Image (cartoon, rainbow, N blue to C red):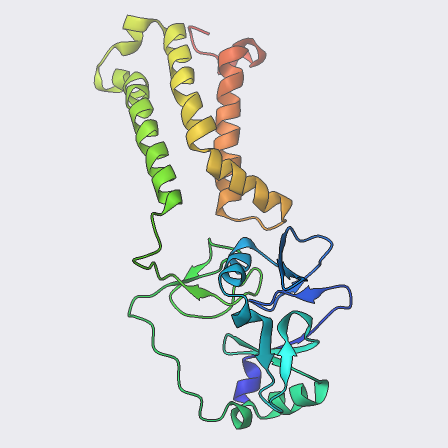
Length: 267
């Protein structure tokens, strides 16, 4: 009974197939991730599964029914069960029912998986914002979480390189912006030297690249979260930064639209 508490049962809709890597249901008519192997088209829920399949297709095409030992096509299996983060495939409902009743009987003396190094964290390939200290399932999409294990031969982290470049360029632009905005507070009359209106335009020209270029990945992910109806931290960042910058743009280009009480002495 304890095993059943951790078991997820899946029945396959007639209009969908299975992702052969993770076992999620995929609609062939809507997914953008496909791969043709041996004259057969396979469908995937996300680019990570597609990449894994492309690298080693034979490892994901077939599975062995743990009850009767028959070979099952993973992508077209009608009967699957997920237990302790691992998905099992069955040739028929009878085998699935037997396994669900007594999974320990059919798992036998399988060698235990090697323990992960201490401190290993787990993430979801479809929802990378999900990071936990224990293996399990993604609370958003239900996929099995995967260990975050960078390997020595993984090559450079392109996202890290890109974000590092964006960070340093933003830092260079933000330093004079910080002096312009905070200088008067510490007794540095920078705005008196430039004039208030000129200072505002300088702030705008310095901030625009930071928001529109450096922060573009945040806006992209935030918009994707809205399209996918799965709000997350990127949604919050996009809304907060976008609202603040939009307000500032209006204030610079058309300050007269605001009530007089909103305006400073210099307009």
